[in-house]
Image (tube, rainbow, N blue to C red; front, side, top):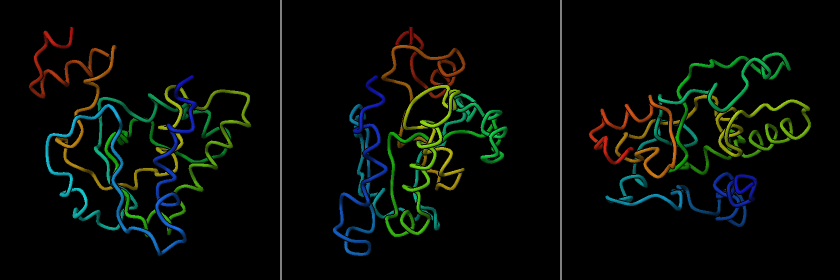
Length: 178
């Protein structure tokens, strides 16, 4: 139930929270999940080139769209054709190019997916609450931040064996993961 908290959706409204009117607030925002340990200079994120994308996040291929979303149902409902094997973006560290975010109406697109979820008898989301609508609305339109910006899964109490193997391959001690 904690995932249904409005605070879980707060990152999607940062551009609106931080400026009085479009064009009068900051041009770049950085969101960092509360369970993230900072071990570097986040100023690098502020000056990073997002190459015209509305946001930047770490690409995470140990989970795919089908981990979070019933892709067959989305297609059946006529809401688009998404690749179920596409890697996800991890929102734990999120860099937002405010003008581009507003130009692409990303918050509105997220709200549209949340409305579809609310009005559908079947579960579109297979996991998470705020991650699925963001992934669908963004549809791969994000700049890939380096893996060093977000070591996904370290704070979780459980994970799939492939995720655990991925962390071990990344250099984390397998004893820590037991």
